[in-house]
Amino acid sequence: MEKTSTMPDPTVPPTPPVPLDALLAREDLGLRRVAGPSDPGTVVRWAHTSEMADPYPYLLGGELLLSAGVHIPDGAGPGYFDAYVSRIVAAGGAALGFGLAPVHETVPGALVAACDLQGLPLLEVPPRTTFSGVARAVWQLMAQARLAELRRVTEAHRGLASAAARPDPVPSVLHRLSRHLDGRAVLFGPEGTEIAAAGRALGEETDTALAKLAEVVRPADPDEHRPDPAGPPESGAGPGVAGAASPAGRARPRPSPSSAADTVAGIRLAAYALGAGHGFVLGVAAPPRDSGDHTVASVAAVLLSLLTGEQQGGTGAARSAALVRLLLGGDPQEVAPLLGGERWRVVHARRAVRPSETRPSDTRSPEARPPEVPSPDALAASALGAALGSALVDPADGIVRVLVPAGREPEAQTGWTLGVSAAVTPHDWPAADTQAARALAHARATRVPLVVHGARPALDDLVPAADARAHARTLLAPVAGTPALTETLRTWLSLHGSWDRTAVALSVHRNTVRQRIARCAALLNADLDDPDVRMNLWFALRHI
Image (tube, rainbow, N blue to C red):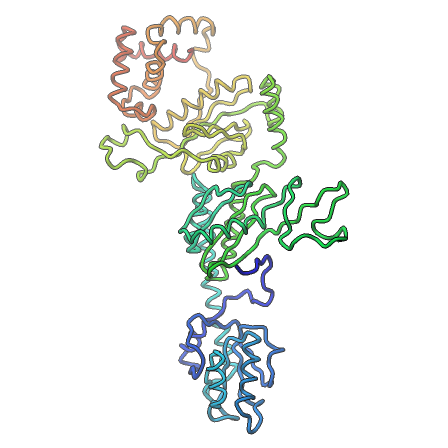
């Protein structure tokens, strides 16, 4: 394993390198390879002209060094050329371009032999091609490569942003990132476990190395001693040395870098710390490719930081206090101010159905076919809560429930079906939960993205609540003992007697709906086609 790096190489320019073969393909230059390996992976980072006998001090690495041989003394033998080429190779030069005329009519044979021996590509520059022309061609190819890279990075940014807006944002972002890098993207949790991953597997060795690299950037727990990768400090180390004892006598946590990189078996690894120290880490493993890949991975890290971090700064302690008070018997009305509001809405959300998620063997009509939707994971539910403006989220049984302050009006969310209650005080949260559930059922049945429970005054407000409940108990007594019948009757009436929509809302077959409604009509001894009967039943159902 190569040494882990947490800092970029300052000698590498921000522009992408140019393949040497691209220069050789330029007919206007007329360059010809006369020695050295023919490796398509050889790249040029810049062009530099020098007539020094020892160019090493003036090279940074990756250059196409151009020389007309002015520095070659008369009678120079193989020893001179071997030393000259070895210094270029030692400096990291990518290739040597030798210009013909006016000093030399041909490339010296000893130079050709030295380049072949030491593996340095040697190009013959014809008399008609100036060194300035070669340098200009290098910068032109760099500019073209840079423009292509910017376009590719921009498209990747758009794809990642679109993925973050999906109902399952975290898996979608990881999948998009892995496709762009042609590798693997992994989200590690605060305990170091793999929460989600996407992309092709690259082997156990790579997976293990990536998990270890994630530990390098994970913020240290102040109560946990993390071993220093550089080894224990020398005895007598001063207070400024990492790992020295703190005034309280406890080892100081070692600061963690925000990112780190490594290479294992030719696979480039990178790890990015997410958020404000919550312990989530993005790990990426992919073959080395383009310089813009780091930029794309950084954008993905920012998006995942938003998706995995706290939704509202400073609310964690308040939510914890509210939970403790409720567990100890506190009244919701007294606890609500800790959560940030006096009136609230309850939102029920369910993943919207896509045609690709229905069973091909199901021959029922789309309206009657009960949708089968994967249950949202905790991160998708958290992202939905963030979009609605609340961190109070409860994903359970395929439904996500969100408690939203009344000042925030819930809006339709792509990929979700929402049911929203009226704004209520904490005392009425259970009733609002029921309202949201019914609104969600109505939204699913009518195939609209959002339904808000109506809070308009109704005729039943003119009847005393006690009298209304007594009337409801008497009228619905024959079916009250069977919740499936009362809920089916309520849904069927709310959907104006539609068999298919009721079946969708209840996730049952429409024949089941017909059987239940027929059973209700028989037990109630009522004609359910009569609008007056329907009105009385609806009035009663609102009070049980």
